[in-house]
Image 1: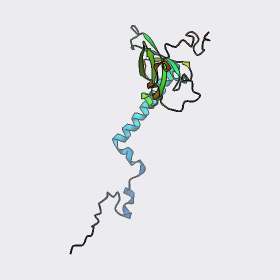
Image 2 (image 1 turned 45 degrees about the vertical axis):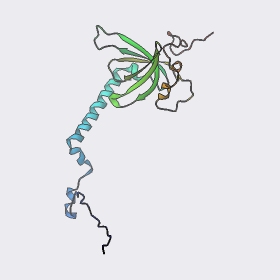
Image 3 (image 1 turned 60 degrees about the vertical axis):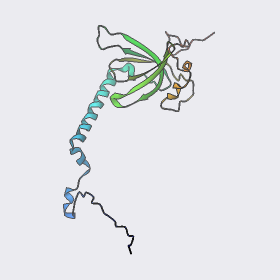
Image 4 (image 1 turned 90 degrees about the vertical axis):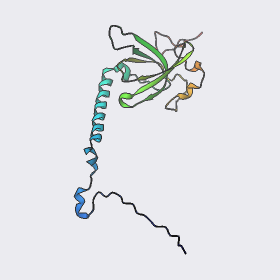
Length: 181
C-alpha cells in the first residue's frame, strides 16, 4: 500500500558568508553604494536639488506667493524664450491641485473660456513661468478644504469654476471684491 507522505524540499538560499571565520566578508550597509546605478541616483538627486534651489532663488514672484488648492490665481506665462518675439499670456483659473516632485513640480488650474472648460498643468520650475498672482483665497467658499486634489469640481457646473468671467473682483485692485448693487 502506498503511503501518502509529503517530502519537504529545502531550497538553497544564497549565503553571504559560510563560516564564523569568514565574518569579515559579510556585506555592510554601505556596500550598495559600490554599485554604479546607486551612485548615479545619488548624483542625480544632488543635481536636481541644486537646480531646484537655483530656480526658487531666481523667481521670487512665483515661489513667494503662497497659493493653495481652491484659490483663484492669475499666471503670467511667456510664449517662448526668444526675447524679440516674446509675448506674455495671462491665464486665470482655480487651482485644482499641486504636485511637488523636485524639478517636476507643477500645479493644475481650471477655468471656463468662451463657454469651454480649459484645464492647464503648469510646471513650477519652467523658465517660461514669469509670475503667479493670487486673485482670491479660497474661491470655493468653504471654510476648510479637506482634499489634496479638487478633481470633483470637474463634475460640477462650469459656473463654479469660471474665474475669468466673474465680475466680482476689481481688475485694478486684486483680491478686493467690488460691492454689487
